[in-house]
Length: 363
Ligand SMILES: *Cc1c(COP(=O)(O)O)cnc(C)c1O
Image (cartoon, rainbow, N blue to C red; front, side):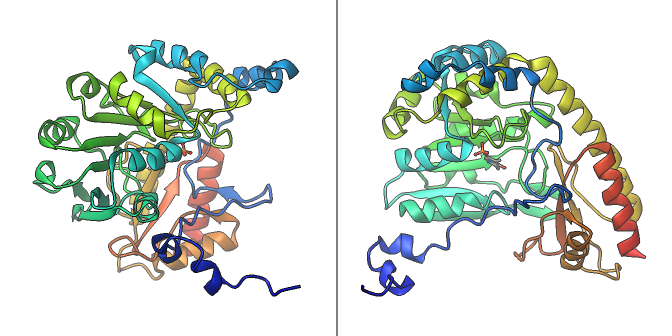
C-alpha cells in the first residue's frame, strides 16, 4: 500500500489560495461539563422550551422527505416579528453560511471584500478561500472609543462587511453612519447583526430604503440555538433571489426549521433572556471597571476588557489563569487587541465565579 498523502502533496491537489489559507480556528468547545464557557458568546440560558417540543414533534414522514427549500414556516414567523414580507427573508445553515454564500455571489477574483479590523476573523478567511482580494480597513481606536473611519462609502469593493454591534469590541456604530455609507457605496453592504438582540436598535429600516443593504441574523446567540445552525438574511427580494441561486437547495433541515420557527414565535421567552444578559452586562462591566479594566460600552453579550499596564499580569496571563480555574474566555495574539480579553456574559452565578477568580488572580 502506498504512503498516506503528505500535507505537502495535498497542497498540490487544491487551489493555491486554499493551500495558502490557514482556515478558520473556532473557539474551544470543552467536552467536560464543569468548565464555564465565556469564550464563544453563546447565550447562557437554554433555548425556548417550545423549540425543544417542536423537535420532539417531528414525524418520521417529515424526515423521509426533503425539507421546505425556503423554510417557509420560519420565514412566515420571522416576517411577522420583523414587520417585513416573507420574500424579504432567506434562511441559511447558520449566519456563517450566509457569509460564505454572499462572498461567492457578489465578488469575482478581481473584486475586493472590504471589512474592518479588528472584527470577525472569519471574514478574511472566507475571502481568501474564495480567492477575492481582501481590503482591510482599520477601526479608529482612541482609548475605549472605536469608530468607523471616514471614506468607506467611496471604497472600491464588491462587498462590504460590517458587524454591528462589532465583535470583539461590542461597540455600536450609529445606524445613520451605516446608512450614509450604504447610500454612496457601489457594492453590497452586509450588516452583520449576529448580536443585535442585545443592542438597542437595528438597521432593519435601511433594507427598504437601500437596495444594496443585507442584514445577517443568527439564531445562535439571541435565541440560544448555536448547536442548531440556523441563520437568515433580510434584504430586498430581488437581491435575495440572486443569492438563492448560489445557496444550497436545502440549507436548513426539518429539525432546525421546526426548532428555529418555534423559538422565533416565542419572542417573550427570548426577550426575557436578552433582558437578563443586558442587566448582567451592566453589572459585570461596572465590577470590571472597579477592578481597573477599561472597555468600550458594549451593546452585545460580551465585553472586551482592556488590561492596563499597571496590572501585575498581562491579558494572556489572565486568560491562562482563568483557564486553569476552568473558566474559558478569549484572548488573541493580534495587533491592537493582545492587551485585551473578551468575556461572554454568563448567568449571574457564572459571572460571580468569574469576578471572584479575577480578584484572586489580580492580587
Ligand atoms: C456568531 C456570529 C455569526 C453567525 O454565527 P452562526 O452561528 O453561524 O449563525 C456571524 N457573525 C458574527 C460576528 C458572529 O459572532
